Image (cartoon, rainbow, N blue to C red; front, top):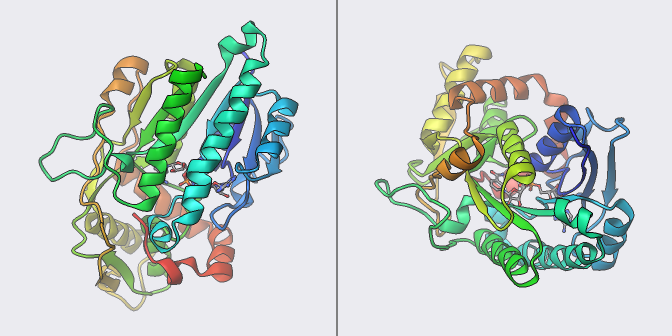
Length: 355
Ligand code: NAD
């Protein structure tokens, strides 16, 4: 297999760290991880690759164009996989400005740097170059219960400052491909879950609150539907798109696992009842508390990933219940990873659950 030089942005985050672990452990790529290390980052998620010579890390802000220029010309990447973003919907409602800055201006900066770098390459190197942008299904807005899942042709109707900023960044990437012929691709993915997930998100928050016998918050009636994808499968899908997908294309990535939030929370409680029964509660489900819904909360997201299946023979294979049990078990056994986050920021108290 040919060795590729891959620059990953946001590689200390949840999906980025899964991608970096995948690239180092399952391919022979040389990886530079560029991450600002915001509250959402955790270098401990990269312990297993930290000493590998094919891996390096630089703390930097994608909005710093000069720094990005230096890094591109020094590292000489063949592929850019761009995941750096502000990603928490409630934080975007509270303070949209960092979302506009990182998700829109940051993506614009990277595209401009990539354009200059690409134009400096000899034609052989140009043929290998790819700028891949990792985006979300939330750009499509929401669906009602009987609507068809989102295809790549679905119109953009973002609801939150987060999804609007991601939608804007998708448009920029398409424009740089069309106008400047920068070889780009985009993937729009559904909700990810798995090990190393930041504790403010629905699944880890539920597990950790339950383990502490704290209330488990569920927004509104809990009937919002999300499609769930095991994060390690997302990493593999991104790699397949970057290496085999077509320039200029968008691919939807989904898990074929639509569940209501309350179903997810109950399933976690059932797994915990089996793996770590409480000494004082009949079931962890007794901790569930319905709380005031988020403004503009989308009801349903669902992804049609048949294009990715037909074009690149990729489909999710981890069953949600199996991936969930693996995740619950990982959180039970890896308190050393999540305890410092809980103690230092208490993010869950400030922002509650994110789905
Ligand atoms: P995350 O919040 O866990 O990680 C984001 C990472 O980006 C962090 O390490 C952070 O330090 C870094 N970062 C933020 N601002 C930066 C900046 N200005 N410069 C450099 N680094 C910066 O996010 P995630 O859940 O891993 O999501 C990664 C990407 O995937 C995002 O673009 C997100 O929109 C997209 N996505 C996420 C999901 C999901 O379910 N989590 C689903 C679909 C798409």
